[in-house]
Length: 182
Image (tube, rainbow, N blue to C red):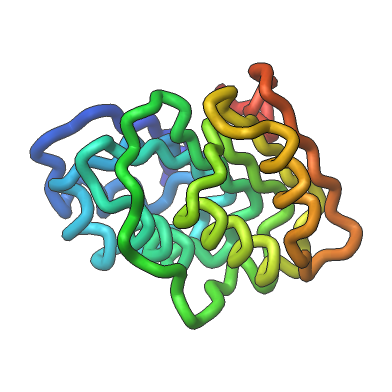
């Protein structure tokens, strides 16, 4: 039986549980999260997912769905958050109090494209760095709209569970496909 390895889900307004369940076997998932998908997030477990690239919609409180995806993706090794398109509303949620298995056991690479240094982003960044025991590389593309020097210092001062992790920051675009799947 063959499995779908890579899935790219764009701006789908009426995504149903059936389609999302059919994606549960993917290894690489690129997801533009819309409001209609949020309710379906809890119904699926992505047991094979090792790379997740998350593009939150401008109209979704994005932190809670991201935390759900971390909980339902126990083998996740690479996480990229892409908020580079500028209209992302602040999230009013807090990171989870429980640590997802992927953070405590598998996540090696974390990238954030479009990091602004807002309070909700800092909370999530602190949470991921503090709970990721296997983290090797953290790549952050800073938006030029933030105070680059101050934001870089804040990122460098955040406590990390993985003392061997390397923090890379830039205000110019980089290749963010860590696994080579595009």
